[in-house]
Length: 482
Image (cartoon, one colour):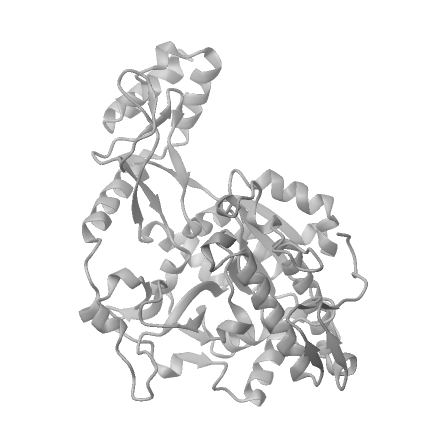
């Protein structure tokens, strides 16, 4: 202990963080060990430049990017609504071939808790109130199984889609327990790999790391952009290479309409030889609080709504559509080769996003206080900040009503909540039945992923038939249980 303590004292003195040991003598042996463990995890070679870059980022907040921006070129964004069915089917065929060959994996960002939903568990375990009572995790797992089946039917070969799930420190064990209790919803256990998101220390405005308790350093999750480092540390990139995976579909857990490993998206990106891509939705209005994919200083990036002026947000093309309309929805394609480049070369160059927060801290007298005003900063990385490193970047504009309904708030918010997610899925599934020649009376309508992944192959079941709400098209699960 004494040698360990001396080493830490020397390390901390070199970076002016000696205050982290201020209360060491007051701690019990167990708490001393915990504090030393926390300090061991701090990489001061990285922390100092992180603080410097965070300071630059803080100072840049509020700077508008209008004069440095251009919209995405038309030839690098494919609109589903404006593309022929024949072309979409060709992309779908390519995607299914890659799935059948075992070249495709899904990378799920599932670190979030359901706190804002009043749900004290991982958000992926949330049930929005469908007739089936399926959770987000279950819906997504069943879509993966159905897609494997569709690829096998199309190509005569059963490829497995590996499911990589990034959790946080707090959601790792509950997520694992939930998947085990439900037999991984029929997915092979060896094809589901969980790994943990990293964290970064919190700072006060003078660059001093904050003590959360006398024996604990204040830390916060490093954002969804921490996925690149987490994959490298957990051996995920090595696992992908070993399995022969070439392409990855990455998305957040909270979109109930997500087309997991969408073969059209995969096929389009493969055909275009893109190393990185994003699905986007058309902004609903100039003031919608969503970032847009654009070009800034000749590099692709997501520009937050706060980074452009009202005038730029309202700009329109000759056809009346917003000039900057490509709304980012955390839905991305990567080649594994690109992810390996990020892990080995670019990860340390990712932008740092800074938020001023009220961070509980231990004052000079040793009291733990919760401030009324922001007293420090939390640093995050965003998953989309790798766009600028892509040699070939493309985007796909998808219909919002078919592919995006976020679950972020409690029902009291009235948007991006369980009720809107449930209603959006009901509307989409009703649309699938009506497109296949059926009639639905009423609003409640659910189709099991085992029946149809995205509205395909429904004609035999529904054509010429009339259904009364509540409608639930289901068939016995392939594996697993509720």
